[in-house]
Image 1 (cartoon, rainbow, N blue to C red):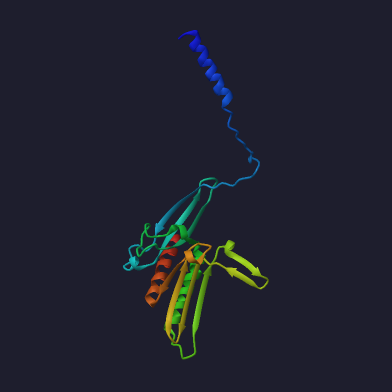
Image 2 (image 1 turned 90 degrees about the vertical axis):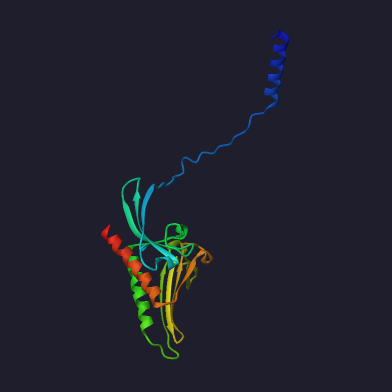
Length: 210
C-alpha cells in the first residue's frame, strides 16, 4: 500500500471520528431502594378428576402446596378455578383466575353448602323465601366508599335461594378486580350442589393426609 493511500485512509478515519458523536446514555441508580424477592415452588394436584360427572363441572378444584425456596416454610391450601371450557383437567382450568382457600375457609364454605342443601328440602309457602350467601374476598378488594358503605369484590361468592318458584344456587368464581372477568356458574339442581360439596370434602381430606 502506498504512502498516499495510507494517508487518505487515515484522513477518512479521522473524519469519521469527528463526524460521529457518541451516544448519550443516562443512568440513575436505584440500588438504595429496598426490594423484596420471593422464590416459590408449588406442587398442585387435581381433585375429583375420576368422578363420574367431573367433565360436567364448570370449575376445577386442586390442592396445592407452596415451598419457599428462599428461607424455609410451606403453605398448603385448596385452589378453586373457573373452567375455560366444559372439561376437568389442567388444560381446562383457568389458573390465572384461581382463588386459594385455607382448609378452614373451605370448611366454612362446605358448611354453607350443607345449609344450601337444607333449602332444597324445605317447602316454601306463597310469600316465603329462604336465602344463603358465602363470600371470600381478598383484602385489597375491600374498599370503604363512604362512612357507611364498604364495597366487596369477592373472588368466590356462593348464593342459594328457595322461593315459591323453587330452589337454585349460583357460584361467582374468579380472582379479578372486574366482575366481567369472573365466571357465573349455575348450580340448578340439588345434585350440582352435592357434587361441589363432595369435591371440596375430597380436597379437605387430601390436605389433612398430606
